[in-house]
Amino acid sequence: MRSTFFLSVAALAFSSLAGVSQSPVAPKSVQKPAQKSAPMQMLAATPPMGWNSWNFFAGRVTDQDIRNAADQLVATGMKDAGYVYVNIDDTWEGDRDTDGVLHTNSKFPDVKALADYVHSKGLKLGIYSSPGPQTCAHFAASLDHEAQDAELYASWGIDYLKYDLCSYRQAVMFVKAPDDKAAQMRMMISAYDKMNQSLKATGRPIVYSFCQYGWDAVWEWGPSAGANLWRTTGDIQPNWNSIYTILNEQAGLAKYAGPGHWNDPDMLEVGNGKLTLAENRTHFSMWAMLAAPLLAGNDLPNMTQDVRGILMNHDVIAIDQDRLGSEGTRAYSEGEHDVWIRHLSGGALAIAVINAGSDRYSTHPFHLSLAKLGLHGPLKGKDLWTGKDVTLADNMPLEIPSHDILLVRIAAPK
Ligand code: GLA
Image (cartoon, rainbow, N blue to C red; front, side, top):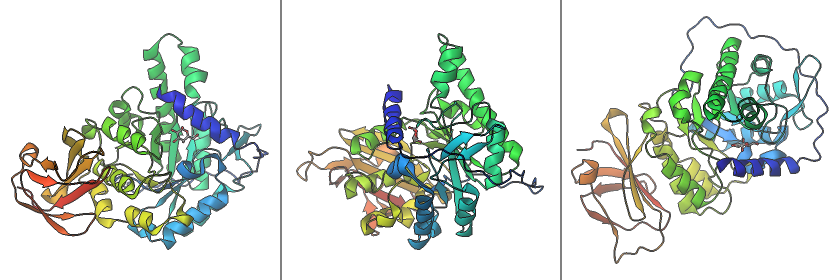
């Protein structure tokens, strides 16, 4: 089961935290922000972009790491390319005091000051909690303190909340309705809606990110429970199998995504683990085709030029951020090649061809069928990884290296 895996990841993170003191650090006074009278802009009108601490730092993340990430987003030009959210994942939490106010642990001495720092760079700050009593890494979470926590986040200037199901299952759903799956799911939905109401009550625009691994077809009910994005799967890992498996699980979900509400196939692993450049390219391209949130998860201060070049490919980012917000679909697969298309604003189109295999050569190249896409060649376009003009013809042979991708934008398809 999916849950087994992410729990073991969280447990690992927790075990690496033995040295973290959870002595409460007093927060600054909790003030309600002034209610805004002007109409709120749509939150997450395009998929959120930024960076999240989990995929690289896991439980080791500190205040300094978040500041470094913010600095790097600016220095590398990533901020200007659209990466604006700097998201603290699990393990920032301390204990609650007698009034129930949640305090940070010693790794995060002052989140308000951190938020001020991040905001001073023109960036936004995200945070993490769970509807259960504990987070996945066993830190204090929001059960029975939803409104109080939402107000605390707002008082700090938080702009984004990732809300991770975790212990809500064992501590609430499985206990209150042990033999009734449907009742468990209803509880889960109302727990997500409870935090939604609490966030709304603060008056602060806070992007709301559901993390419950896609349970109970979250894409069907997430938007009405306030989700701006929802995880569709278990945890991503920095290897091809994980990325390609998650990608295939997205087929068929396109109709649920759109401006303000997005499928989230999990944060980026670009630059992590032993992913090859081809795999990093394919991962990034396909998350753009999926209109996925682009939350980098790598070690920004030590990023290679190649990885930076992938994360900063403006043409690919433009596919992800296309204002039409129409998610790509898998048009067809043939053997180990997949063809995806995405409709873009102004009638443009993106076509992606992936070679997921390793055993196909120029002797028997893949032949792209434009007819199967409902198109007629020749089609003039731009190869978004070489930057060169290309012309796609029906049935043309394509030799794509193993785990690599051809990504073409066609301005005027016919
Ligand atoms: C779960 C989530 C991850 C991460 C960890 C933190 O496993 O799916 O993305 O937030 O919890 O403990």
